[in-house]
Amino acid sequence: MSISRLLGLIVLFIFIVFVATFFTVFVRLLRVGVSNDRYVKLQTPEYTEDEPVDTYFRLLGQDSESGSLKFNAYAVIDSASAPFDTLDPGDQIIMRIENLIPDYHRETDIDAEFHNPTGDRLVTVDFGEFLLDVPDGRDFYPFDAYVIRFNFAYYIPGDWNNPAGSWHFPTVLTLSSMTNLIFNNPYYGETALGIDGYKTMVARLRIFIILVITLIMLEILLLIYLLTIANLQELLAKGLSYIIAIFLIRTIIVTNAPQTPTLMDYGMLFLTCVVFFVMLFKTLGGAEERSIITVPKAWTDAVFGGQSPRENHVEKNDDQIDE
Image (cartoon, rainbow, N blue to C red; front, side, top):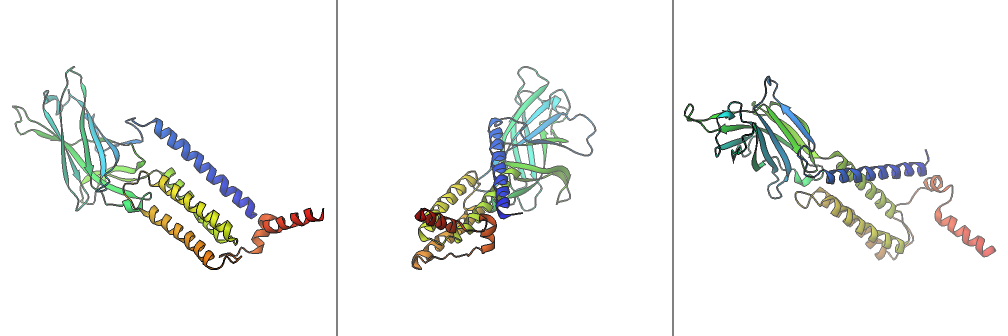
């Protein structure tokens, strides 16, 4: 396969990635606000009967200060099934979320008030937002991923038969994501502490990671191309354009980053410094007509059919002079 054909395939691949990314982002924007966006339902292996409460944890994003994952929790309660059939209007239901990752904040209690003015059997109760601590990997954005292990239960206030109240451990949970983070391989099972709980890995969308890798490869190829330029003026013009392009690409990638600087910032800074010092070296070196990297003649022959662009240009000028 010739180099020109290989370059054509690379350009085609980059074009396909950009088109796929455009339509992915377009569809995501149209679906913002849909509660079942990228959701997965989990249940315990012992699940044998109808669950009286459907619980939903919606991932909203990350806290910029702590790196904790931010969720919104709500539940659809069957008010005619035990233990929720004892609830009266105004009762406070407590949801206790237990983080099963060692050395992190273990228990978070959030509460909501039970209301059912129309006497419906299925009642939606919104518990609001809560934070779940995870190992902080924000420095590796957009290649960051987070392990979450947790369990949760409902506390239902008691009545005259059971003044102490009771705890209910749900067997069904629906996880959904409203951000560019997605749940990978979620399931219910034994955690690091030997306790059964919900376990999953939260990572960036694969299409987003593929786009970032493609842009990085393109920038590296362009950097190599700059190192082959011998003319100082051409190098300065294209080098400055390259630095501006790097800044724009960096801005696009880290727009929704949970913190800055990240791995992308350091990488972009490295590429910018390389180009800057190459231009400085060429300028202080007296603008010698030589490149940092010399392209083998066999490569140029394969791409340009046996002659470099400069040689073709010179031959055309000679033909014009002869005429």
